[in-house]
Image 1 (cartoon, one colour):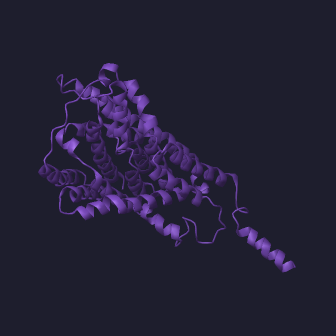
Image 2: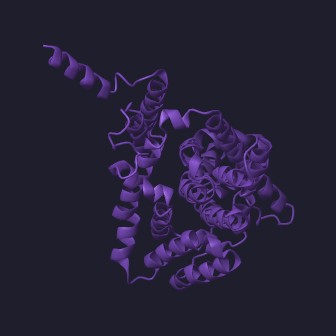
Image 3: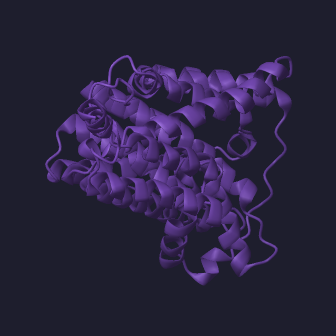
Length: 380
């Protein structure tokens, strides 16, 4: 009888109930909230469902030594997490983005590239604030990239500059990407007048297939020579786009933009979520990162809108840009472009801004990768 009782006691020590505390329960509740928001409101379900369930997985209280946790070397979760830790998931995501992205809007109106560049101001603004908040220069650089609203770029940079903060930075970046439809519209309305919101832009010119084929090659050469440290992201982005536009690699483009991108996105979400283990995640620095991430995102959105207003000072009537597409310079493709379109239709039901907004939107993807390369070259 005594042996049975001892065995039961030993079994109890290995259960999650015996090792549980309020911190784990809080994180599990956060994970469930993510899943609820994704299912109920359709907020980036492809991101929030894997991240939410990953948070639940990572916060099952474990008896140390079972070798199943994400931070236990050699465990299955730890092996999958190396794609985040070593930074080789993000370039694969970028190849998928390139393979599914049409750069026609940017090619037809190159000045929209400047709008995407302006939105990167949020990255450097948040960097300065993170330094004031007590983070080291390399950590501040990794936190600032959240302002680009680009989860893969945030993971890539933080894996190089601040590996201990990957969980908080990645969850923050993906959370704000999911909240684009909530965060951006009030800023856009605050910074624009009714007259500006009603600006109608000329239809983009037709772009030839030859231009589309040349663009990824020229685009890569120009950006890679300027910022060689961004080659892993820029190279895969433009390579994916070449697969799409070449006309002779359709199967490869479909694989890159479909199954491969879905698999890698799922693994990123799940392992990033699992990395938010309560004892490592629930710290003051995590709160600071979420606050700084929000500020960075707000600055980026405002910078894009205000830059369009500034640019319009030098453009003739009939060539002006609707400032409602300024928000699309953050690289949350295509959600921020959709926000531009929805806001435009609210003030003029016949003013479709989606195609115009895709210009700064894809420019933002390039811009965030370039910004990451610049920061990496300074702080690696």
